[in-house]
Picture 1: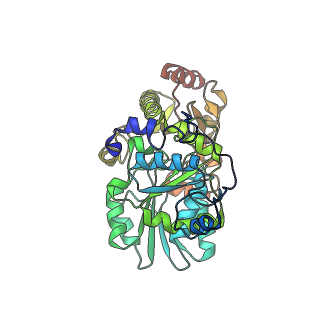
Picture 2: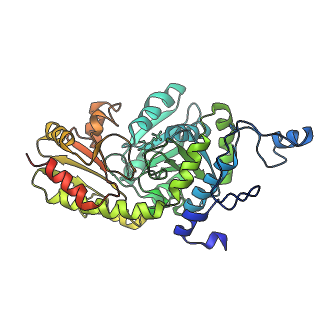
Length: 393
Ligand SMILES: Cc1ncc(COP(=O)(O)O)c(C=O)c1O
């Protein structure tokens, strides 16, 4: 019965119930580094993995607060289990360290968040991992890039900041055929709009800093997938220690309770803003997966049930005009990050993707004129009015 509950009910209830000790209605924050064992035999059994239970906060399942968050996101993504991290980057790093070794080959979306690009291009390569950045929307090009040592295909879809969409089921199939791990960064869509695991993907990662938290007040990440891969990740987690703090786990639980409500509003607001921008004479181009003008609109429609709150666009007059817009907004905040209840505006080429070399940015479509908008859940008329006044020069 529990697993048959609908998504919205799982957002509110999964992983939670009255605290067995005191009956607390809200999941308590277990702010403790360590746990006391009943006796030396129990301690030895926990360390040997013969008895389930808590040991020390760095060691999974960390604390009951972490366990509740993992159970909730696992239910929403349709996963077997998962692990919480200090940030989205810590989560992606742990997946890469668990899966790849010297001499292995990684295929990644050419458009990924700037620090993910740097992790793959500058850090993993230092340890002898080969990396190919490919437009994963072009399956023929992906096929041509496969090597005998390809061990992981990493897809960010929709991608930050171009909103490029790739075919999750086809990439998972390709990875399975060659014995590689398929990974999807689902930060932009969230499980409310896109579930990659039922489409065949092995592992889903999130920056829970974004829509999962939803309020711009935490830093976190999470990995979900099959029990075997998560088990393989544990030694990496335990030795590198980049785990989530208990308060952040609690904030993620609280954020997920309203994920379904927030995502509906983010998406309907974003569609209205995208249409407003597309019709505006000062706007050169708009990228939003729901617009028929989006190059992978058909794939997005096939695998997503909605299109989220992220939009990118170019202002006529290039970077200078974009800067002017960003300096003139009043309601929107000029800030990086995304997925918060309020609307954020930023310039990828000089901010979130500044670490990606300029020639690479140009090649993959992160143009200097690109402005990225994370549309919030305010009244959409106020968001549009703010953009309208900011564009009136
Ligand atoms: C798609 C995507 N993945 C991962 C990350 C990294 O997350 P964090 O900042 O929580 O480390 C980000 C951050 O913006 C992101 O946009």
